[in-house]
Length: 553
Image 1 (tube, one colour):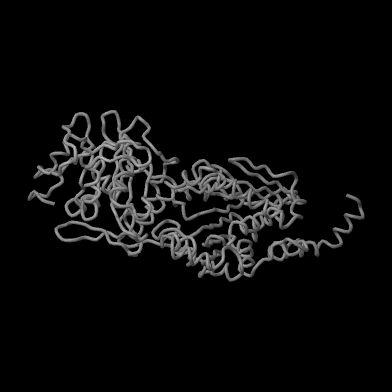
Image 2 (image 1 turned 180 degrees about the vertical axis):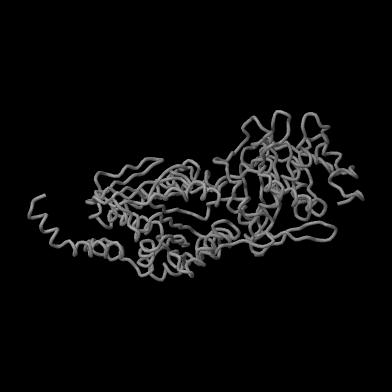
């Protein structure tokens, strides 16, 4: 450094300090300074407020809809921070490190396209791999990614930006994520001091809306209270209309069409930023239900090693909102004694609108064959009796020409078309078994014996098999939505039923799962030492554990 240059800095040091302070305090105005004449982002007022909040508050909770540009602004805030706070280390976290890496990679390339001068602030091209991402700045700052998982335990950063925080549980957060930024940044001068005015230990939460009763719902309410008490926290949010009014995202007509055609819960969470579900009197603790989402991959057929059953809740209507015939394949995991220790919902299939009973019967027989299921539990009340009648007939597969065999029932007196047919169909009599089925479902959630497919956040639309791979995950999302909309309702004689909070949200996926769990727990959960109960004789039982003391439900 020449003496002339050094003297120039010293002469104008106060101006430099003022300028740096101004840039730190006004990130949106700094981005305006480096905006090219053409092709840049024109920041709207709501986006400017967002950028200033994540600069000025110890913690920000943002709940925004799809298409609002929250992830882009989040990365803009991280880049701004990495440039103006030397040697700072910032991480973006998501459900998986791979997902976080994809998000950072996409938004970085989008950002430097709009603000080319940012390329001059990095020491070398960023490193982006499948499971990692790193951007190193000339300031010594670094941006990378972590997972919202135990694999991140013990890591140390100065600030965290948590993506899709609605999927967090508080136990994981307190054990793994909260300690990560507990060591503050020190200045890089001779003093190497901690700046008391800096947002040391900052953790920001960004998400689309989730479910009431979850840890993150409670956290957002707590932060609203702390915001009112001026404790350095702030909660931001909007629905789809704000971005649309600024001309961002999808057109208004497209979003209104989605509102008309999509599941009400899906639209409320993803576009209206509403936390949905019942927080009082809920069927199960939604936090515990979400913790069951541990299966990473669906199974589209039997693995050849385990026993499977199918459970079918039947509907038949030309109206989309009433036509939700659901088929749930359940995989049984036993210990060495034959006792069931886990039940995995490896797939969830809904039939398309308008299928008649014959067509539904063909579909069910195809699915049973894929999984080699030992039983098919069907809700025989009402419309379900029509499907059972079709299953008791022989039929030719119209696509393959294959003979789909006739079936017989396990527990009623219906006569199959062909005598001696295999006994696959169990007629679930809802009025008789429903209360016990509800209790079984609640017990399976509470004991964590049930396992569901995890939330898929990859969004790899370039994968040619994406639609097929994503379908089971989406159906599991819909199951969670249905269960979150149910309240437990006591009825007479110490029995239970369920009540929908929002009538437009169906409960067919829940019903199919509940029936299958009840059947497994009642008839299949026996050790090798126990006497096996033949389900064919179920209707003869009088004082078994399914009945009350008087021999009835």
